[in-house]
Image (tube, rainbow, N blue to C red; front, side, top):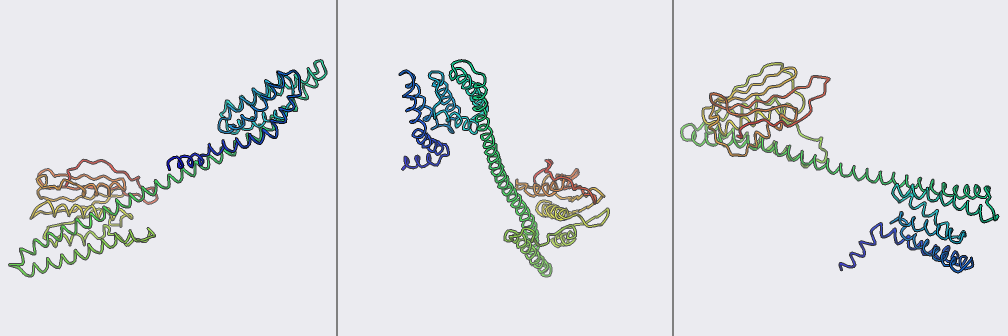
Length: 417
C-alpha cells in the first residue's frame, strides 16, 4: 500500500508530470525530426560525418525530455550537439530547429545566467552558420551570404526569445498573484484567530467581573442575613431581597454576555453598563453593609463609548476586592476626577491593605489593567501608606475632532489581589 501511495504522490508532483509530457514530446520529435535528420546524415560525406550527424540527431531529441525540469542542462546538450555536427560536416538538419525550442525553454524556465548564455549562444551560432555558408557555398568568402544568413537566423532567434520572455513574464505574474492570494488567505486566517482570541478574552473578562462581583455581594449578604435572622428578621429579609436582586442582575448580565455568542451579527449587542450606572452599583454594595461614598469632580458630560464600560468594570472589580479582602467595618471612597484630556478613577479603602489575604491569581487586577490599557491608560494598585488599599486608573480622553490614543497594555507593578 505504501508503494502505491508513493507512486500516486509522484504522479501528482508537477515536476513528474512535466518530465512525462516532455518525454512524450521528445519521443514524437524523434520520429518527426530525429529519424529524418539521421537519414539525411547517413548520405553525407565520409563515414565519420554520418555517425556524428546520427548521434547528434538522437541526442538532441533525447535532451528535450528534461527541457523544463533541467532547462540549462538540456540547452547545453542541444547547443553542443548542433555545434559539433555543424563543425564536423557543415550540414543543416531538420533537428536543428530544436535549438530554438531549447532557447524558448531555457528562457521561460531557466535561471538568469542560463537565459543570457542561451541567447548569446544562439546568436553566436547564427554568426557561425552565416560564416560557414559564406565560405562553403560559393567556394570563396562571400560577405553577402554571411550577412543574409546571420540576419535570417538571428531574426528567428530574437523572435523566439521575445515570445519566451513574454511567456515568462506571464508565468511570473501568475505566480505573484497566487503567492499574494496565499498570503492574503494566511493573513485572513490570522486575523480571524486574533479576533476570536480577543473576543474570548473580552467575554472571559466580562464573565469574571459579573460573577466575582455578584457572588461577593451574595456571600456577604448571606453571611449577614444568617446572623441577623436570630435577632432582626427584618434585616434578614432585606439581605434575602438583596441576594434575590443581585441574582437577577447577574443572571441578566450572563444572558447578555452569552447572547453575544449566539448572535450571528456581532453588532447586535445589548446595552452594557457605563459610568452612569455607578450609583446603582454603589447602592448594591451599600446594601451589604459596606460604607461607600462617591465623589465626582470635573465636567459631568457623558464619557466616550467604551470608556464608560471600562470605568464601571474597574470600580466594580475594586469594590468586589474590598468586599473579599478589606474586612469588616471597612470604608471605601470612590473618586472620579475628569479633566478635558484625562479621567482619573480612584478607589480607596481603609481595610487590611497589605495584610489582606490573596488567592494568588490576581486575575481581577489583570482585567482592570487590560480595560485601562484598551484606551491607552494606566492602572496602579497596591497598599496605601498608613493602611488600606488603593486602585487608581488614569485614562486619556480624546478631544472632539482628534484621533483617540492607541491602545496598549502597559506593565504596571502591583500586588495581586
